[in-house]
Every structure is written in C-alpha cells, then in structure tokens.
Length: 276
Figure 1 (cartoon, rainbow, N blue to C red):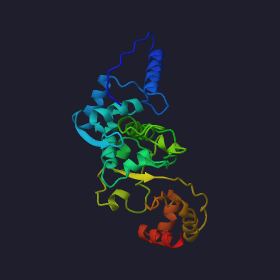
Figure 2: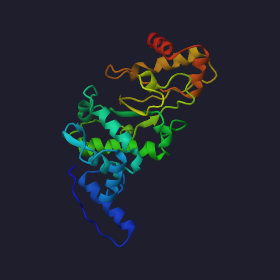
Figure 3: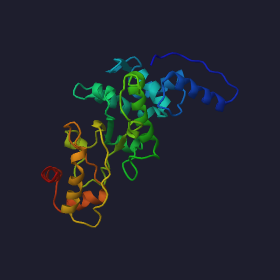
Figure 4: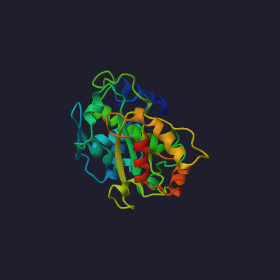
C-alpha cells in the first residue's frame, strides 16, 4: 500500500462514499467491506491521539517488509472505522506482531488460516468500551469490530498479505476479519491474565496470540468441576495447533464453579494436561 492523495468529487455524500469504496476496492486496500475515506485531516487527528509522531516507525511487516509507521497505521485505522482513541491499542498490537518471537511471517504466507487474536486487559477495556462480556467475540461493538478489522487491513495493506498474492491460505477464516476481546476482570475469580504475566492490575495491555482453530465447547451447565474439565479436555487435542498450546476462555459460570471447588489456574492447567 503506497500512501498517495486521491481526490474524488461528487454532488452527494452517498455517491462520494460509494466512489471511495469502489476506488479502495479496485486498489486492493479493503477486506471486501466498505471503508471510511482516510482524509488528511482525519489521519492527523488519529496521529495526535497516538502520542507519537506520524513518521515514528513501530515495526516492519512481512512479507513485503512494509514500514508500519504511525501514519500508515492511522490510515488503516480510519478506513476500518476506528475512533482516534483506539490508536494506542493498535500501536501496542503492531509492536506485539513484530516481536521476533511472534511467527508473523509464517502467518502472512502460509496455507493455514491462522490469524492474530488480541486480548485487552486493564483500564483501557472500559475507557474504549471493548466488550468483555456476552457476545464479546461476535458483532455489535464498535471497538471490537474495528480494532480487529484495522489489524487485518494493516497486515494486508502494509505487510502485503493479500489473498492469492503473498497469502496462500487455502480456505481462509472468518476470524481474519476481526478477532479481539477484553478479559472480564470484574467477574474473574482469579487474577487477570496480564497480572499473571507480571503487569500491574491498573496497567493497560494488549496480548497478541497466534490463533489457528476455534471451538465452542457446549454443555457443562449444572454439572460438577470434574465433568466441566472432562468436556473441555475432550475438545482440546484437535485444537493443539503447531505445538503452541491451547488458549481457553472460560465463561463466568464455569470459572466460578471451578473456583468454588478450590481450583486455581495452575490446578486447571495440570488437570487438563492429564485428561487431554
């Protein structure tokens, strides 16, 4: 994606937006969905909200080795429908994606439909209204929908992971549109994820996971902790992709049942390891 100013004129807002969408689609800048035109003034507001200069380099994205500057991130954030205040989350996510230990280059070109999954912790969850409750992985929340979408546009437009060009993914995945949620820290009977990783509870963090598969584990209502863990463990082996482990998101009821049985996170991990 090369940054260039494109001037479009129209007699109506509706026609202007339609023409902007068609132009971006023809240029290969979208995920197939309509975009918000990234006007210079809007991009500057996003840069200002980031706390960085526009030419600050956050990372280099494979396979194109595109320079993910703050300005380039802002352009994609605008197109995705983000608000300016989402910029710190996007910058933190790009920092995580370009960490040498994260398999981004493999993710960008493989036939596997793997994609990033973002978990947000800390005060930013509330201030940005990132959903951490019912339906947190589905539609209906602007922050979840547009932050995840902006990451996909960044990976495609800056990194060059265009389907059928550099990206050789066989079937793809709907998770590649947007995959992000926050942790429900208020109803979590244990310590939040970022605290387990050494951060303070009032720190705002973004954790970037490599996600390959998704499995909804139904059942477990009205049964004891042993049956809850058995049902989870039964579904775990197919999810163990690439030797990277399994990320388990527990609903509030199941988490509370396990906690009331005296089980901590480590206890649950060890039992699931044995059962699976």
